[in-house]
Length: 184
Image 1 (cartoon, rainbow, N blue to C red):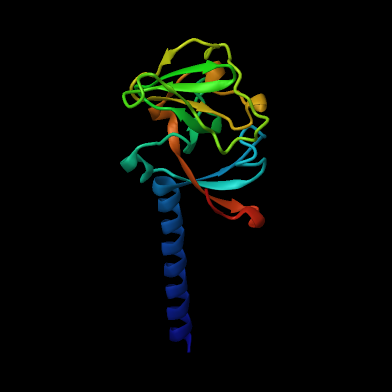
Image 2: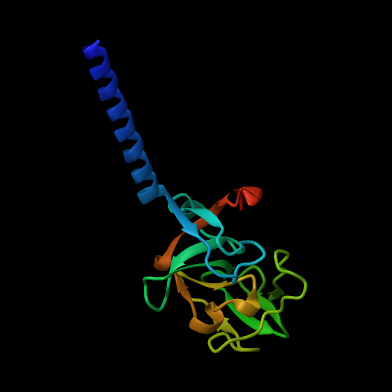
């Protein structure tokens, strides 16, 4: 009887240890859990929602315009923010009449970015870094990121380019609250 109890305890301990190690490895290497603070990404992500960011696999296909990323602050390297990728490395970007104009190799004459994820009332105002009617060239390995709630977001319009090395991962899943559970 004691041998079977001892064996059961040993197996339970080993199972728990393996589970803890797996959670630790996944958390450190593959997935970054984050909580949304503030309203800068509404309506896509709301205050107090909890999300998961892919830290590895997004790099295979690189980031695309419209992806939502979590990153370390450009200014203090301690704070963590969540914003949407708008401008890609090597592109040029300009804000004109509340719209974002993108210039790249495919569209050298430029195109107005259609942002279907924004509410109709949202306009893109310029900032101290990204000024109205000023064409800005995005360096290699850097991005322009903006919050969806442009009136309540401090983003690339104010602090500039987001260096690629500051990006922690791409938001892929919302797990809280239950009524908004699912892939992003």
